[in-house]
Amino acid sequence: MTTISLKAALALCAAAIILQTETAAARSAAGAAVECLKVQDDSARLGCYDREVRKLIEPRFSGRLNVVTERFEVREPTRLRYQSDGAIFVLYLKTGEDNVVQNLHLGGGGEDSYVIEKPGNYFLQVNGSEGWRIWLEPM
Image (tube, rainbow, N blue to C red):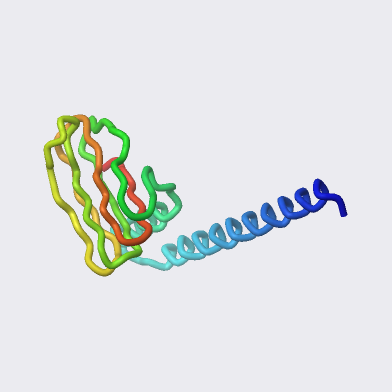
């Protein structure tokens, strides 16, 4: 097998693995959404769907360890949702002028959120010990 053929075969294998992983994730998400159908209370069912849809949205920011994000604009109240895989996660929400608006943290990994109420230009300073993901969600 030539070097080009070997590279092409490896690329096809990698693509197949990625596709299989994405398909499994989609099936899992669909299965969780189907479970929401069983919820009798309308408000609780809507909450279930909202929770499952959030799992499908790609994070606005993601990374590992320490990062300062690009600036972003908030025009209306926005939920800042964040997840961490590590024992240490500190997130500073800062104005465009580098003033700290809110200091957020997670100990031992997990997920939480904070509502940015005031319109403006912001950026995030993230200090983490492992991987993390951050979403900006409309309210």
